Length: 174
Image (cartoon, rainbow, N blue to C red):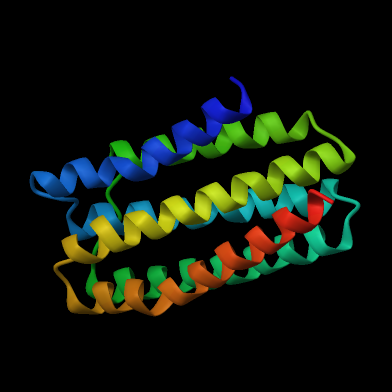
């Protein structure tokens, strides 16, 4: 699968909740699974970038992704445990996992500047898609106010990640 196909697949995976929102929308247990999976996908990509990139800015960005997304997952896990909500696998979380695995496989085959560019391009697309899902599906569909508040609280971090990735994307084109 080529780069655009993988990015499109990731975008569609995260856009799938939009289709659900037009019907019933994901329930809180499904939202929990989507959140945890989306964060884990980015943690895994960050770990790969840490080990494969030679660019100090890309490595620093990857470390930030690992740290920030691990923190979001810890917060989400604490919340769903306290609320006694068991994350429920669903087509979106399953598709996210597959898309993440496919992206890792593709990135593992790249080296040097080619890897850095592909990783950062993926991060730009991924974070924009996650933000769209947060805004259009996850927050509006969350029934539990604490879950909704967590999504609202972490949203600015995703915006910051997107802006940072865009800056790196521009610098890598030079």
